[in-house]
Length: 269
Image (cartoon, rainbow, N blue to C red):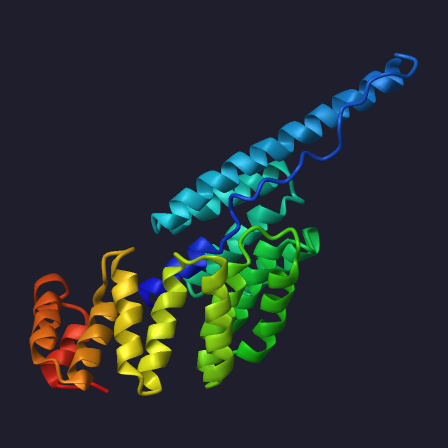
C-alpha cells in the first residue's frame, strides 16, 4: 500500500467517533430500591462505555505509530469493558487489514457494522477493505451509503475512496467525478489532488497534472510517489531543468525508493 493509501486508511478510521453513553440517569419515582438499582446499572453501563472509548482511542494512536500488537490489545481491552462498542471492532478490523489478516479484518468490520449499522465511518472503512481485497465494484455501494448519510461530517472521505477504486476499475470518468466532488467538500484534500493529477497524466493532460502537483506542494511535503509523477510530467512537457531537479530530489531524499530505482533503470512509464 502506498504512503498515500495508508494515510487514507488511517484518516478514514472513525476511531475517534464519540458515541453517546448507553442509557441515561433519570430522577424521580418513588426513591425505592428498584429505582436506585436502575440508576446504579445505568451508571455502570456508562462507565464501561467510557472505558471502551478511552482504550479504543489509545489503540488508534498506537495504530498510527504502526504498533499493531498494542493496538490489538487496546481494542480487546475496550471490548472486555463493553462488548457492543462498535469503534473497537472497527479498530480491530483496520489493524488486521494493515497486517494482511483479511479474514479477521472482515469478521471485525462485520461485527462493527452489526453493532452500529448506520455508522458512516465504519461503512466507509468496510468499503475501503472491500476495495483493497479485489471487490472494488461491491465497495462502491458502501461508499455511496456513507457519503449520503446526512450525519456524516466528512463525506469527502468516501468520495475519495470511491474515486481510487474507480481508477482500479478503469472508470476514469467516474473516478474524476468523485475526486472532484471530494475536493469541493474539502479543498485541502491532498488525496484527491494527487489522484486527480495521476488521472490527468494518464489521460495525456500534463499541464493539468503540473497544476495539481503545484497545488499539492503548497500543502504537504512531496513524497517519492509524488516527485516521480512530477518528474515524468516535466519530462513529457520537455522541461529538462525541472526534470533534473526532481531527479535530484529523488536521489537525495528517497534513494532506496522504488521510484528512484525506476529512474535509474529508465522506466518512465
